[in-house]
Image (tube, rainbow, N blue to C red; front, top):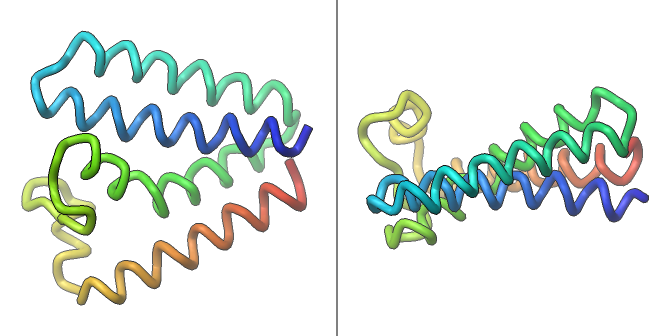
Length: 118
């Protein structure tokens, strides 16, 4: 059951990031369909796990993986940080290795919570 919950949470992050990339490339129909699938995957993860920690796990996986997957689906460089979102503007003031280290910390947190509690 843990593998299913972890898979659903990671799938939700992948679907959401890919949807965002497609929406920005102008492929809005596919992007919106992927956004809906993201919500379904997250809802299923919450129903199967029966704990609120699925939300904490989702946020940690999202912080760790979202930008990388979005950049790949949009065609940007993997560590690209934009200039318009608050998130990107905040992280632009730090060196890329610091941002990458933070993402590794959040990925470790997400995996630990998922393996222990989901």
